Image (cartoon, rainbow, N blue to C red; front, side, top):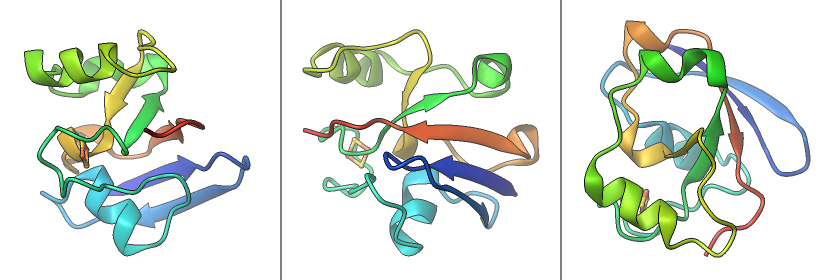
Length: 106
Ligand code: FES
């Protein structure tokens, strides 16, 4: 599953992720800048905050209440297209997705 990450410096990197991996796992394994994944994907640290291209939001499974709560608590705030990369799983539905890594991570 191809996913393109745009890091805080504006560099784009396209990775081929195994199905079932989270976008955070893929980013950490490949050293994408700005995605730390401090909590290991447990939806408690928000160091994997990213922005999903608006046109593809409907292709993702909806954010859980926990994810929304955490995003709301961020100093940079939650945008309509904010998601936690650890809560997005690679699947054929998201082939070609582009995510922009949030510049500020807590
Ligand atoms: Fe901690 Fe995503 S890795 S919330």
